[in-house]
Amino acid sequence: MRLDKILIIAKKDWKEIFSSKFMFFSLLATYLIPLIFPTVLIGIITVFQIDLTRYVTIEEIERLKRIIPTAINLDGIKLFVYIIGVMLTPFLFVIFSLASTSIITADSFAGEKERKTIEALFAAPITDVELFMGKLMVSFIPSICLTYLFFTITSIIINFLTYDIFGYLWYPTLEVILLIGLITPLYAFLGMTLVIWGSSRATSVKDAGNYAGILVIPVVTMFIGVSIGMIAINIFHLWITILILLLIDIIVFYLSLKTFNRERIIITV
Amino acid sequence: MAEIEVSNLFKKLGGKVVLRDISFSIEEGDCFCLLGPNGAGKTTTLRILLGILRPDSGNVYVKGLDVYSHINEIRSMIGYLPENPFLYDRLSIWDNLEFYGKLYDVSSKELKNRINMLLDMFELKDRVSDKVGTLSKGLRQRVALIRSLLHDPSILLLDQPTSDLDPVMAKSIRDIIRSLNKEEGKTILVCTHNLNEAEELCDKAAIINMGVLLGIGSIADIKKNMISEHIFKISTLTPMTKYINLLKSLDYVVDFHIIDDYNVYVKLRNRNDVSMVIERLVNNECKIFEVKFQEPKLEDVFIKMVKENEVR
Image 1 (cartoon, one colour):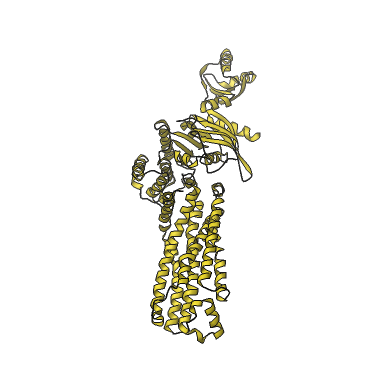
Image 2 (cartoon, each protein chain N blue to C red):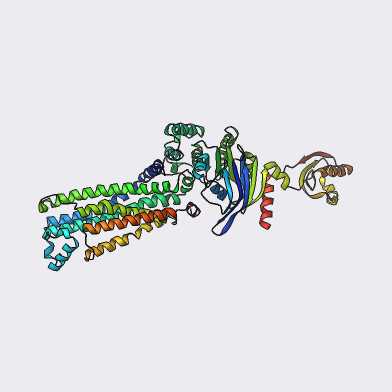
């Protein structure tokens, strides 16, 4: 495996993808949602001084504190802001980062198939691993950079809006750092691998993108699990999730590479 | 040692046999044509040579190396022009060429020189920053041909290099291919269903239909072996209508066709029988002005072979 060939493939795709204004702006728009939604919500809470304890029962508050153990000493507005920052925001980033990687990967791989440029690429002296890694890198690097960039902006805005309430820069917490820093890229990687695997079977960019769609289900399930108190957001659970995801990533990557078949791709072009 | 050696290739795609026992070899510096109608198995053969498809059985060697154990080494030696240019429409000509040059391990400095030299040769220098999507089919085909030459390969595989091009553009592409073969000594395999192109470009050919190799050899040999009837055009100074019955009575005349009063095509089983036809006509007071042998056309050979194969 040669890193320079992987980079050549990735650079070409970046040039191609970002030469399309539509592609560039739809990618940016994807990241505006996890930025705008929580910050606006926190803005409303802080401006209108919305105290969560006025709207939910004490039992409900206790249940929420069990879900997020680090929120044990928080009450009122602080608790409401904390729940949005720690529970809602990272999940939005996981889902939208998955969406953006799916868009780029599908365009990069299934797009080559749809536009039939894949044949000349297959005739070039590159290995399956180099091609596969090149195509992964195409979406992984911009998606992760954009996730980190937009999350940093979100964190700055949240801290700015809530500094008066907390009295210190509290965001992001360690749980959020693990969710954004490790779970988001691992999940995006899984999505990309599935899209590439699906691209070899799909006939269009749209079809290929759908393969990552199935990954939204476990994220939403996990979010619901957290919301109803079945899963708690604590460091131990997060590390377990990271290890399981890493294992799944390795297995899916290995299987996708093993089943990568130029012949099947070329005859369905 | 042959530059390309293909032996006993069998290939099934989607449950259908697309290649049956294909064998041929191409010597260094030859321009070889794989001639066949659409769906004959030409592109599949090229894809097997490039290791994109794997044969179900049979062997493929390029410069003595087995394609499947030296796949990237072999791909580096081959320049491939697919049937459609398959370029990146959103990128400029330069970006397209630079990308492929780098994939083929051409060093940056050499790549820049090669691109400039080839753009000059193909008269595309002033279009270098144009997006490929804005180019005509003919210009795209030129860019694709430049792409196949970037790493200065010793072997070129060209799949229908002039399909869908206007006659002027097609001629210019054929001139370039010929010069790559004759002047630069590149070994070229051309797949086409265009018989004029095959005759114009190649010395040797293999005729393929429905995955079966129907004939192989020099184009002259193929014509000679396949056409068992010989056609002569006889021009006279006396009206030919008077001799219809005479021609009908001659055993060695397979068929004849009166073109006009003074010209007739006569089809003979043996070439030498022409002297007897002339003798009989002259004895019957026919004044012969000219007798001309009609060179068999590759088209006739091709159609005959393909029809015979389909009947079988």
